Image (cartoon, rainbow, N blue to C red; front, side):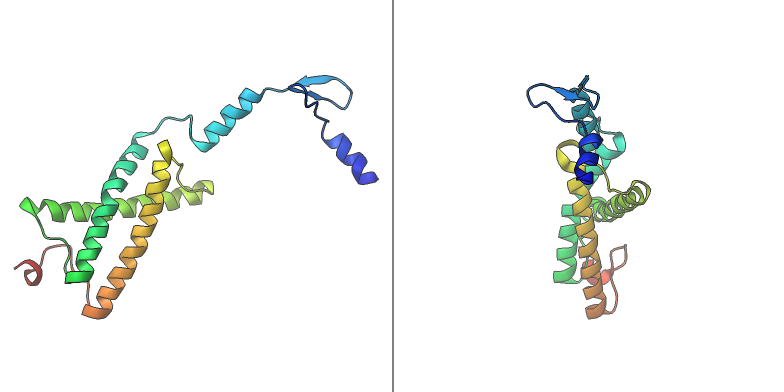
Length: 166
């Protein structure tokens, strides 16, 4: 009995036939649903514009994660990383891809520590997807490098070696 009286005074009853709340004193209060929708959109990141850093992370992550997958597959099957390619371009892309993934994971961890949540979803959820793919890539890097170390006793260095491409 006491609980029901506390609950009835704590929240005003809602008149379902209009967009108005009836206050405890019997007066009608106007509700503004459009402000609620805008606030919810800002929280989900839909209304905010994409920053340059977010756009760079999306682009870099969408390129880097497949390159790392190719690199790890090549490392596991041949014992060597990707070939240098013309002018060292493939090897450079491989190295930059590893740095991009580590950078995205570091940015995500920093944001998680600072705000309590990871990176925003970004447009079409792409930044959130890149964040997740970066964590999966980092896990794959740890697993494949660990297996390479157990099988070969070392992991390949950042520069092409004669045993792989000589």
